[in-house]
Image (tube, rainbow, N blue to C red; front, side, top):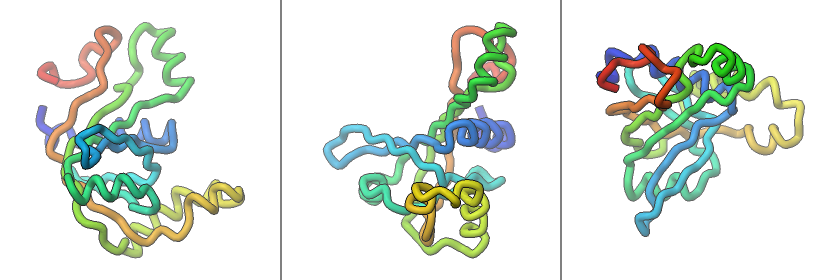
Length: 166
């Protein structure tokens, strides 16, 4: 598997998964060595095997990254129509999910373009009080450099979806 060669597909699968659930799961390691998973709805991928997320208020996530920058980000398409259609056909209509592995950088100020992207993503829900409380005042991001990926696979219904050596 070559992340550079497969990036367009990997990016599409992650974005579909994130759209169906509103978040990606980011796995880090606690200082005591135990795993920690945080749902983050502010992950954005670029076209060069990198991305970023807004480090807004997930306290343990930032602390864990500061002591160990290795992460795994997972997104799974949880859309009911996606699963119903796949189950009826006896074959997935698209890859169901992906895991991305990489290293996260230090927190930095978000660029105006990054802020514009998050504001566009959350705008449809801003009329709700909870959405305004959760998804406003974004100012800082962390960059992620991805090194490799692993598709979410099932033993059946996936012929030809990923390279054979996946």
